[in-house]
Amino acid sequence: MPVTDPTECCYTLTAKEMLEAGDFFSPRIYGDFWYDKPIFFYWELIAAYKIFGVNEFASRFFPAIFATLGVFLTFFFGKKLFNKKIGFTAAIILATSLEYWYIAHAIITDMTLFCAMSITLMTFCLGYTRKNFSLYYISYAAAGIAVLTKGPIGFLLPGLIILIFLATEKNFSHLLKMKLPKGLLLMFAIISIWYLPMYIIHGQIFFDNFIGVHNFLRASMPEHPEVDVIYYYTIIFFAGFFPYSFPIIFAQVKKFFREKKLPKIDARKKFLLIWALTVFIVFQSFATKYVTYTFPYMMPLAILFAIYFSEKEILFQRLAVSSVIIFTIIFFAAIPVCEENSGREAAKIISPLVDENSVVVSYRRKYSGSLVFYLGEKVFRLEDDAGIERLRPKEFSWTSLNVMPFIIIIFVDDEREKNLQNLSVGTWKFISEVGGGKIYVKE
Image (cartoon, rainbow, N blue to C red):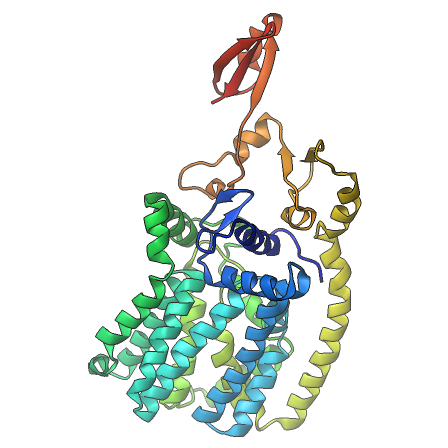
């Protein structure tokens, strides 16, 4: 499938520009540094490009690898917590759920985060329930990878889940057994591989943009206000766990009203439930909402679902088979949809027309980063005054994501110079007088 707009192209184009620049620390896009995501997923893409070349297969290679790893991790965790049958059932539920299937094909960070965060929490759970406290070192290391993949949430969210679980167990004293000094030192050593050089190279601008805009702003200000509604992630849950979500939720609701009480759960089930609910509630409280944000709750829910379906084998088999058939149909339907949201075909047409004297301009359409990725040429965005003012980066706002250079230069004669200030909002800086005209730059 082609690289699509508007999200996949940002990752592929950034990794491509980093590879071309020989700079494996500072993410850059359209020739400018930007601080949208940490480095780990870009390293995956760069490694794939070095092995397979810069193409779609390489771009989707590591998301597919981590998706496969996630299925085996779910099997392993379910088997260790309960038994082999539940582990196997949970792995099949995960692999054949709509959201997991989708993200396994997508060129985004979330599958890597899913595996890193899952390893963090599953090794804690196994260490706690089996009193194998050396497993906690794996938790800290995996949390470090999660922070290198997505930012502070990779450590803060698992930490919150663990603290809530220990609170329900009335066992905060267990923190003394969690190898905190050595474990945190290990995690910060992993994190410092990238964060420390970035701060040394770029200074305060890196901290302000990465922590301020891409982390704090996402939590406090909706990037897409139309989906900032209380039922958003409920819809994502039912759609994401399709086809398993509807029958199991209806069955559990029916059981509750019949028995009029909540079922008793042991420490294992309680941890899985706290893991899933904390992810859901935390991201529901964030102002910015995305389909993929609650993705880390899929492993614990798949295992909890497997406990129910292990006693409903015929229903489970029918759902699993139907999901494979449905997703096969969706896959072939997705190919033309991806083509419509990609610049690949446009690049094929434009590429033979471009030479050293050509300037490619995008006008009156959504800017296509994937066109730049496939074309390998700069594509300038032509905008009128209103568009420029709407898109111009402003401090601590979503427009600060717009990292393409903004510049307007005008060459006017004496007769039209007096009308210059009426052409646009703002002021014009006089640069030089040459050839019977004057050059101004928009400030």
